[in-house]
Image (tube, rainbow, N blue to C red):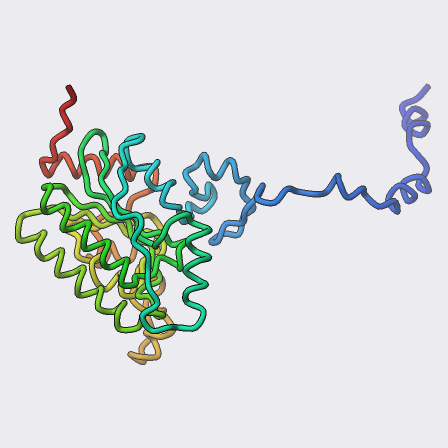
Length: 295
């Protein structure tokens, strides 16, 4: 029997193919569980959630750094079980009685399990003590209201008393518009606290993550003794369109990226997420931070 005869006998009729194609695929065979895949915000590639998590929430295709929750950031940077939160119960008020503001606060509190966008306390990094604070962009986009400003100030004042280096991770849309002038006053308040830290020779490491904008970028976040930025972070005061309309000039391409800021002296180093803890450890040791002595 020839090969042609074998293939002709095994080949189904075209009518059979068409009949199968007309039959609907059972729904249970095409359902994909929610959260199994996510889309990269930059290159739009579909990413398997487990693989993305194992890669520290960094896109393996374009290196886009996804935002991290407070707990994820602490797990990445600090020694296990070393973080001790301070003033966790501070809750924002509604000084201007802004319609809908209380509801937005409540939703953010329930989704993040924190009372405000800024979480701070003490921790160790490779056994070196630090005063650490993190802005949670999942809480009203990490906006800085009166309580956030107060907590940042308390973090700095605590570091002065305990002679600790200050480490703050920023991710923010800027000042919280629902609190009006009360939020804008936090720019001065936090900057004044950092002045006191500088006067006593304290160390402030500022890490800018995606995105760091508005009043946060225009105040304490840009006042670090050393300013690091995660790869690809958006850094700036106002949006590109607003700036262009204000100054009536064309803007350089990518002028609000971490890489552009590095080239023009706004940040000292752009760091990949998997290198961040090592970089911070080196900086702390270079500045004479001593390890805890146990026993």
